[in-house]
Image 1 (cartoon, rainbow, N blue to C red):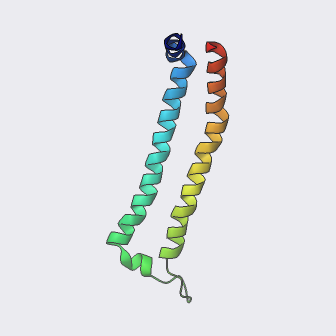
Image 2: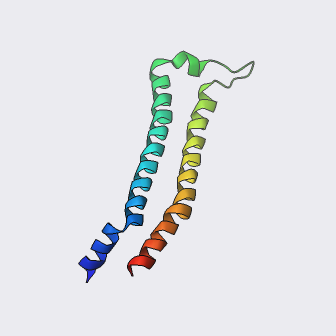
Image 3: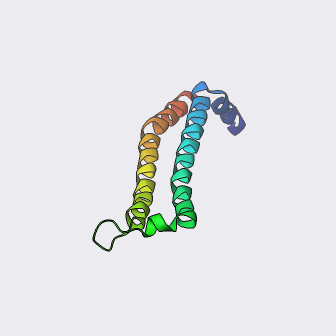
Length: 101
């Protein structure tokens, strides 16, 4: 009985769409995040002068806001994924369950 349900789910067009779109979306956001993170790491490794340069007359350097941007960007990217997962992906999952069961 379980194998029958698994086969129904796997052959469902909506399931195939869900797997494809979720995977593509996840990898796209992953690459965007990796570019932001590793871009920052590359700056740390190869352009310390930029990160150590002061912003105006104060003591704050460019490294502080750039580092904070990477952290905030991570939270934003996570929120974007969660919003779509809780909306579109959960809706497709519910439709698949309804059709298969």
